[in-house]
Length: 310
Image (cartoon, rainbow, N blue to C red; front, side):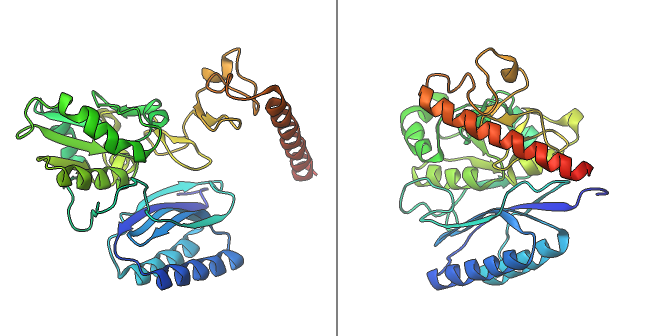
């Protein structure tokens, strides 16, 4: 990967993670950050680890070896990208009740989940007329890219997914006993937990895309690719194209929604201040504050460019 200095690793693993070990690993990782250019977001919980880290290869190797030690060398479901720039400002480590928040007790993918389908067999499954395909991601992620003919639950966050299942899933099933239910998400963690939920509710023939969209885009050549659009990611890149490189979307710094090049041409758009999604969301005082923040950002950019030229 000539010219690309940063290695970006997304990972997750469900395993019993003791509180004392969680705190110990957190402290060790923060020590590594103190001495190295390590950034990212990691979430630890009693059910395992989830997150993305960004650093040069040698630092990534140290971190992955450490996480392997604490997880008991479990499968970390690693996905790798590269970037010329850092995709996070710093390293954040959060300790939560769940590594991906569904908000229900007794949902344990480690004990019971659906059948993994690898990228090579995914196309065949979702083309099957006896299969329904469900995108388990949030509505704004779905809006910028998804698989052909997939169902969009239109959730704002993953904790709304169980309610959607209760209220709407059966209406999509011609036969609860025989219809295949195929689910996917960005990296595999949400659809894996979703399969555990459905199995607990008694659904059958449940499948999930191993490694998620990121692994699929890495594995499947574009001419065979059934994913349309770009894949939203939770870092500075915003979205990745079919080559797993930064796509065409950016972020509205007022509301945090992904916005396309076309969105930025709309009359409602003011860089760093508002977009068409949040035009009614903020007060004039809020916008004045955002405007001042944007001026400071532009000023700092100008100063940095001057330093670079000098």
